[in-house]
Image 1: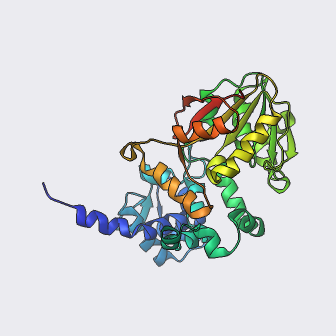
Image 2: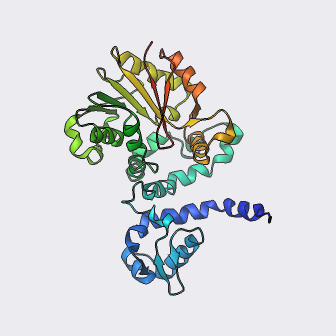
Image 3: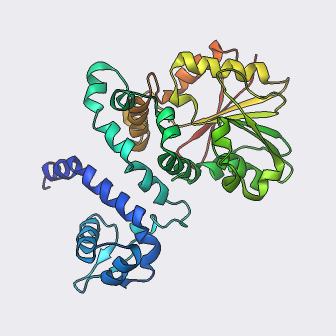
Length: 334
């Protein structure tokens, strides 16, 4: 059998070029305008692009199965390019826009420094935390929020399907623009929600929550100080992986103080397997992204989650698998 490993590695090394082309296609909204096939010249006019440069980019993407371009310079969809449509379910449109935005691109250029020194590449590059940067760059903050809302693996709906939230008061700690709560409230008509996050963040929750906002209370919250009390179920989706163990303990202990008897805590995260070979490439890339962004941030194994929860006064978690890459870890104070 022919060994193609050299060529495969050569192509993988140039993944930055592929990622940026996918990003540009998403920024221009190309996938939304291809329809059943169009001449590239017409498409270029619609997306305000240079026709000759656009066709060269699309034929390069076609080499990776993303769009197809024929000899007459007519572009059509492929199975892969359809995932870039903004109305695809799930969609990769917002992920493509996120992964190519300036701060993400610049952060990864500093990865060598992170590996050598242990310092988070983002703060070494920009001199501020990721959250402070996003606060000062609302355009990139919006892209991030849309990426979280339109999870590429349909995480929010998957969680709502995997756990019974019926009739509960759900407090979503660090819930961003409310996309997870919206999925829960959509599936469970008798359930109510509390969206707890920074004031500037929840101010943007109207679009994600839509008609469900009438069943939801928006509470400005610093989860390092306190968490709203009175919930039946507390959710934290992709929160703990942003923080060091010490900071996670602060958040978990504040949740515990807010929880009444019988309340449950649900941690929604990717979970590492102890055997590196059993982890998906996306999970391991997620761990690398955490390393690049925040001091002490990481994806964790079940053992690491269990130790954190025990230190914060919770019982051993029950693991609930979803149809997405994320699991639900259910626990309660002891």
